[in-house]
Amino acid sequence: MSNKNHVNLIANNILTLFFSVLMVLTTVTSLFAQNDPRLEIVLKVDPEVLRFSEGKTQGTIQDLAVLSPGIAAVFNRRNVDTIRRVFPNFKPEDRFKVIRTGETVTLSDRSNIHILRVRNLNAVDPLIEELSELPQPV
Image (cartoon, rainbow, N blue to C red; front, side):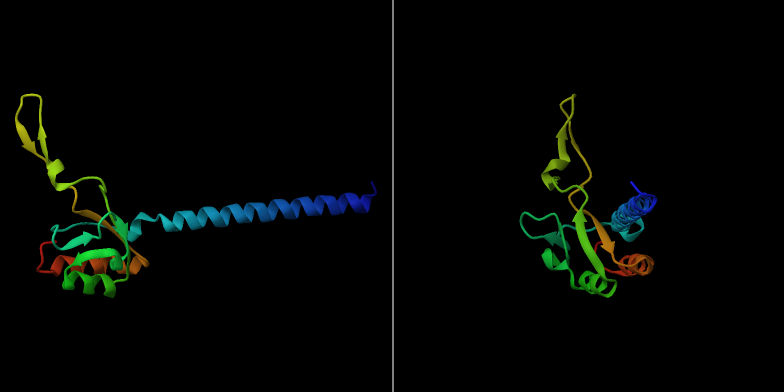
């Protein structure tokens, strides 16, 4: 193999390695940006204020079957991107458990705890502030 061919082969290998690393870094950065916990807010609401359509536990505002007009306005104004239930399989009737002594205890209702995700970090604090000012049971 000539020197020129050898140099071209090395240059091609370096370029291939460079673009491979660049692609991996871009993918990893994109994945981390999608899972940024700073863009999420935990919200506990009255079950009659916020409810998904039958069989759904996450989605957009349009996927909600019942939504308070006040909360809907805040969600739209603050660009809430997605909403999901933290405990998707928990039902209100799961709150009642019989312990070893035979007593029935009542656990907190986890069916109404949600995570709101916004598109922009600057929307988090105003969203929390507006939700805390609402008169509905939030």
